[in-house]
Length: 585
Image (tube, rainbow, N blue to C red; front, side, top):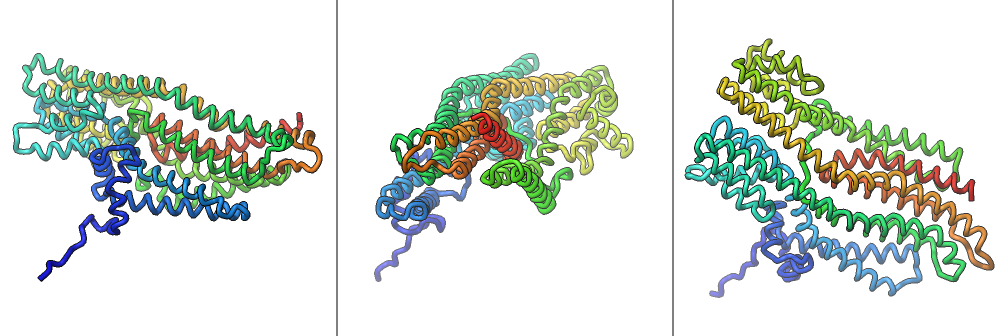
């Protein structure tokens, strides 16, 4: 009897032979990545993601893009016919390449964001070692009190090392050796500190903390230098050159160059934004470290739920867009209405949607900024012989700002309920219940451990203050180094770009009306203004998102809030610049 042939199993995805043949080589080869590294990138993103899935998705995306080119081309210029075939094939190929390159890029960005948590993770392990010099305990504590891929990776290594002489720190460091050598060195030093004599242990732990901080400083310094070139290219070919060309379009038509409005729309509202998006993605991928922001969900007590938040955002968008539309109808040409409504309305909706999340983030940041002073005051009093509980009460009277409010709430909870430090800070209704900061919460956890140790833990608490201050110093310096790049991007998105665009559209209108003769027909100001205005809004969103991504990592709340602020500003500057330049032209 002939054995029954079975189809190869691939997890239920990409079973068609054509897709399987395509998946054998196309995604890795189109991405320029060896297959083993490609598969590692997929596993890092998701355990269920396979090469076959990427191959199938890239084929579907390529076909959809090619079909879109044909449909849009026939709608804009019905006479093109078969001339659209090469453009459709080219677009399909480009989309397929982009789809195949997306997973390695996404894995790199996610790995970069994960490595931003390295200083905090090593710091938690170092601080735990100062209280209990056991590498296994320190590794488990650092993994338990962290979030994100880096903490998850350490947690898996700790679990695999359970029941063995190893702590998991050594294998964890080897796992991240290629991506972040300084992290491996720090992890090995923390592990070595467990076997070091008491006098040598403190120096070893200090070296571990310095290793990861120095590595972060070096990577950020190199990144800042490497970013200047790509960002300059974005300015030149994405902002100034395209906007300057707007003013010379009438001269080109007068010289016989066929420049149509559909061509302007395709160039400024499709091709240029796509190229800018690709350039921004490339720049973000070059950033080696992003310090992760705390995760704040819609279940946070200070953040409205999705239904209420969506209602408020929609109402704010409609109200702001309607007011802007009414204003421009009375003062500006009719073609400015869609731009005013879209730019101001969408911006206001984004601001209303993300404002509560950003407000919580600011409070968390203010608490973290006061953490070092609070720890120092608590640690000094513990060294003097006072309990941690009493030291927290005394520090609450001396620390100001948001951190002072947290200490005061914890002290009040201790007095009323007669609970310990851990429950006062981290209990169900504790002082940190609504503060989603791993750094602050892990520090409170360490304070609870120090409360059990008594007076000998005072020096360790003071050392916590020093470590926290060093971490904050590294973050501040890194963001200060990037500020020159991000500030210029933000200003160009919200002011300089729209200003140049508004003036050039007004000049194009004036030049077109004066210089064209015979049967030449100037580009309609309304169509040109709308096309360039749409590009201004897209440019504002892309450059602002790029600046936010470089500064904070691609965090949706930060990006959405800053884009929401940039869109109304860019709209207003563009329209005012057009109106003013038209009066002077």
